[in-house]
Image (cartoon, rainbow, N blue to C red; front, top):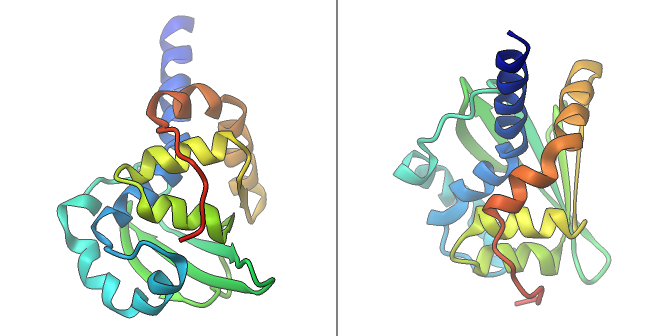
Length: 169
């Protein structure tokens, strides 16, 4: 019985850890190769979210708003947010959400690197493991869930990572 519980906890943690990598994989259909083009194209991207690249259900985080804060090379900050409804990536919106449940911080060069990658989820995992991406949660239970997941994230992300060289576009 104890082995079954440990297995279920392990599966839960792997799923939680790969949520952000899955979110980045949903961006595979987006043709932008640099942050500025991505930000300018956000209004057009919502139609692409219905593609096969985003049909993967994220079973743990069913209804979330993930703010993504990109620190630009010129010192400014660009923001967009991803909406997850019923476990599916629903929309990308320019600007910062009023009440996000998750927050990701990333630099412009790192985001450019992900956008240029053929395996965006793998590039995300690699950059996260290199501590180039910050993840946090808002709300007590979300923080607990993400904190628990982060304790075990390394092993799960090591399996899907794709080493990349960080460079601005």
